[in-house]
Image (cartoon, rainbow, N blue to C red; front, side, top):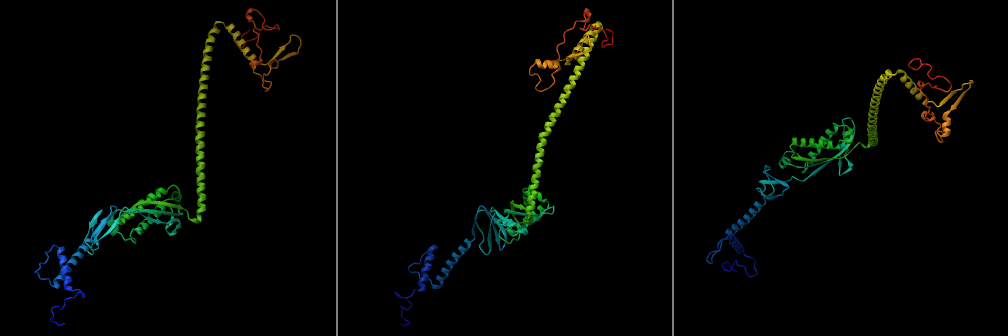
Length: 406
């Protein structure tokens, strides 16, 4: 084929594709997509250079759109976005669909604010996996104890968390761990071993939480301590048995003290009641004696007025009453016989017991004077001229207890 052949450069049915036709078809499609009018029948086809420039523009537009779309990002309700412009802080974004200038002009850091993070001090994963260099602490009374605790925290300021502290991990566990060790050692060092081991755990945890938060706030870490858990507090293993004995002794002391208090609460009210009863009885006895004395004085005053009216009659009456009162309390009677020196003894108490079956012979006690004494027969008054006794003696002779001749 010669160079002047008009069919030169045209492909046959089985030849390679023509580049000019490819670019013309591509330009036509892009033009249709962009709303350009198609070329008319008489319009000459575009040159290959023009077609290439049009295709490159389309590809560049697509790439530009993809680059701009790379700045879109979504922030969850629990998160906060921190936009960095050329590596420095620019602004923060809230939840929703957001956009920033694509890389390399701006980048975004998504920080989860509500996620609860935890750091362990003195152990790892389980209590038996101890870390002695973290858990052994010195108390105020120079005792060593083993304290294991965990600290739970979250993020309260995303900007401060990312830019105002240097941490070795993304969660900031290193700075929280160091602050927690400092705080717990300070709190334990201000208290005695018994307080930390027994009743002071809650107070130690609360005080440690306060100190950790103060340290982190001074550092500007943007971290909020939510809870401090004292998982285990015990003496070192080398002296654990001795501490157990001391704890048991303290419990026994408390038990004995409580028993003593209970006994005191039982005895003291009873003693006070007995004392009050004795005071009341003494007061009643005093009133009884005073009333009796006043009554005797009043009776004596009345009797004195009657005595002044008839002294002899009153003397006899008082004498008889007194002798009756004395003889009623006697269980023995001695009768003086008129002739002879023998005395006749009448054991009236034994006679009364024999006449009354079951009267004190079982117990062997003496009968009461009122029951054993016989009724004394009423004697006639000497004023009627009759003798006072059977032995012929005049009962009116002798001296009465007033000292007058009878």
